[in-house]
Amino acid sequence: MEKSALTRLSAQPADCALLSVRTKPLNVEEVRMDEFNIVLAGVGGQGILLASEILGTAAVKEGLNVRVSEIHGMAQRGGAVVSNVRIGDKVLAPTVLEGKADVLLGFEPLETLRNLKFASEKTLVLMNDETVPPTELMRTMKKYPGLNEITEKIHRFTRKLIVVKAADLALKAGNILTRNVALIGALAATGNLPVKVESLEEALRELVPAKYLEVNLKAFKLGFEAVGENKSSRF
Image (tube, rainbow, N blue to C red):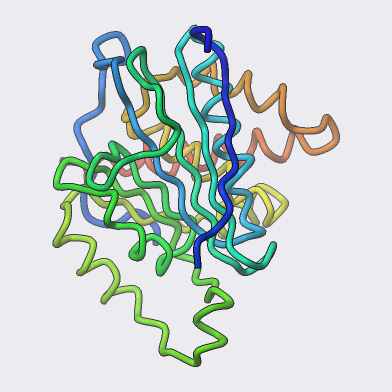
């Protein structure tokens, strides 16, 4: 596959405001571009696939090699969804290995916890605090853990955790469905992406229908500002 090509592979399933800390921002020009791995996790209907498309397209616009893969749960809405975005010259396989994620972008707390196998002490976890119990949990009648319990378990893997009220930001932007773009804006503000903000905005303009573009750009800006204005919680 030629460099700068965005490849998407779909796999079939086998059977708070800001919180605590953030990582030291990366200098885009100094990022090691042989491999940068992003894992996005949540449930169907949260816009995860569009988010991965935005991240991948932004990287392509900067001439980077990209691979995107996704795993869908059994239900289109409410089922678990995991997407991998891999960026870098040496990236060939579309899936991220366990413990190799540079960023874990969690759209739902429990699904973030369930995908911690991809994280390590070096991983930045940026998580939406909005709970959407997956259909599997509802079906088995298991108890949904509290947010504090989830964050405590995440901290056992990494101290690099940011929790964002993405739903509140999306509502402020004017459409709850823009929570995914608010999360991307928040991630962009951490400086932990090998792509520029301008490239992400260009990807938004390319991928989002014109009638929804303004509200999505607003959500992106609100997400960016939510992290950028809380510099005191960085580390």
